[in-house]
Amino acid sequence: MFIVIAAAALCAAQPPVREPVLVELFTSEGCSSCPPADLLLERLDREQPVPDAQVIVLSEHVDYWNRLGWADPYSSREFSERQEMYARRFGLSGPYTPQMVVDGSTEFVGSDALAATNAIGSAARQSKVKIEIQPARADAVTVEVSPLAELKSRKAFVYIAHAAESASSDVLRGENKGRKLHHVSIAADIRKAGVVTDREGLKTDIPVRNTAAPPGSRLIAFVQDASNGRVLGAAMFSIPR
Image (cartoon, rainbow, N blue to C red; front, side, top):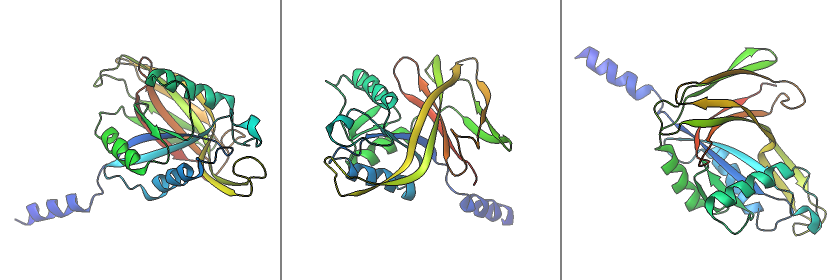
């Protein structure tokens, strides 16, 4: 009886497993509809409100708003092109802001909290590939991705994103003139690190504590199906200060 009770108490003491879900927000400081979506992304990151999900957020600032009065300091053509890829995959007429994309599989207006929690909950119930990020030495981490053997995918790309923890801007022109905007997990770049298949995983060292990945920033690794864009797994590493 004691053994049964002790085992039950041990199980109860362990926190529930949360499946990683990647939430991308395509946003711009030049868009007056975007601040509510930025706030929602911050709440998802801080509060982790969806049971069974570890929400890994990534704020990707597009550049096509820059010509309308305010050049978003975090914007990049790279993120506009990534959003255009999603627009084609989702059969949209074109990109828009704010747009939230959950695990590369679901998209909706980025300020829609109900759509976000529903999509994240659904994504957390999907099978995931295992990704581990561990310190390799003071200036590098090791990213290890398992093969896709238990998933339906045959081939997927491994991406590494570098992101600032948070930042604020005083917007001087454009639709948000006079506002102070705050952002979290601000993507600086997203790069391919390799390929995994149903038979072969990937293990690679990624430098940190450098210009691309300074102390206090985030390194996010995710695996994305090469054919349909579904995100099959994600992991985040906070680079110590």
